[in-house]
Length: 66
Image (cartoon, rainbow, N blue to C red; front, side):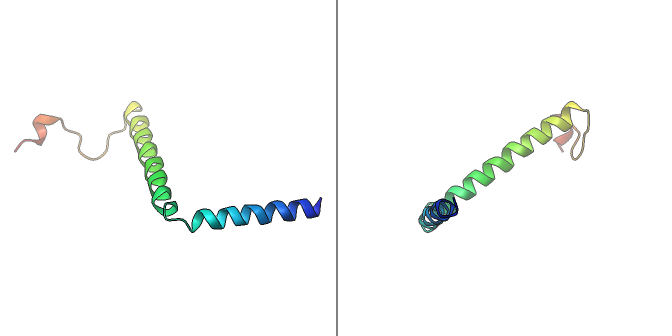
């Protein structure tokens, strides 16, 4: 059992090393992280809006005009 786990871990490390050393890993990670943050902020905004919480600019289009 121990030998099998050692082989599996060695293979995972080898695959991870190959993945991280590629040119597309960091840009892909940034896009995935930014997308997750964007979706989380949209969900947070929707949640706060549905509960009636208002923060920041609370006026409408007419209030924004000078």
